[in-house]
Image 1 (cartoon, rainbow, N blue to C red):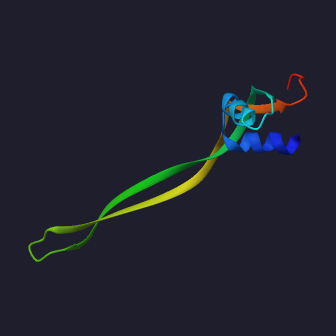
Image 2: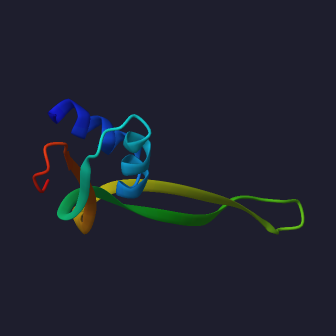
Image 3: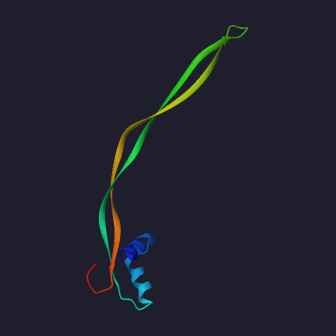
Length: 98
């Protein structure tokens, strides 16, 4: 039964689709989905961009020639916690409530 529940979960099918599929082979299951709270932690990063403009030389007319440099650095910051609901299917074939 656990293996079948795993198969149902991985199929991505709704309870109605599972019931319809199994009724074609004369199995009368009860399939139920339950919303289960889920929490995950996602790593977060901060990117810092530095723009630097500096003179590198002077031309024959006395005009400064500038160069622009851009650098970036990335550093980890506090991870974000994300909360949601996951639909978990379960099934029984013996008439009991899943």
